[in-house]
Length: 149
Image (cartoon, rainbow, N blue to C red):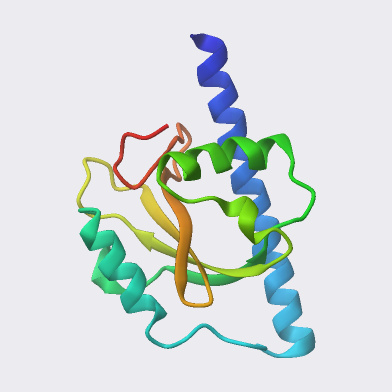
């Protein structure tokens, strides 16, 4: 059991590290190229409505961050494991390999912890995946139902 917990923790840290790298790359691309194609203005309301439908309350109905990221064509083991979580929720990120997607991150307010965020990925205004995860030192990740692992 300890090995499973350690493995999940390693996956969480790897995903967090990848998200940080994507954020820096996105900031650099904004400085060098401008904003490019932006997500439709109603995308936030699509995400918030989706989360409310999953019984997830978020802070002030506005995201903590909005970023663009690319889903790599070469799929790593970490991606495969993350995509398994997506498949359990009815999504499949592998269908978006090589595509640039928009990542909306919200603070979750309706759970026992105050260090949870909900991430929603959109492609062309359509929700294609996401998760709820803890940004604390004892981080973990679940599906939108708070239980899917």
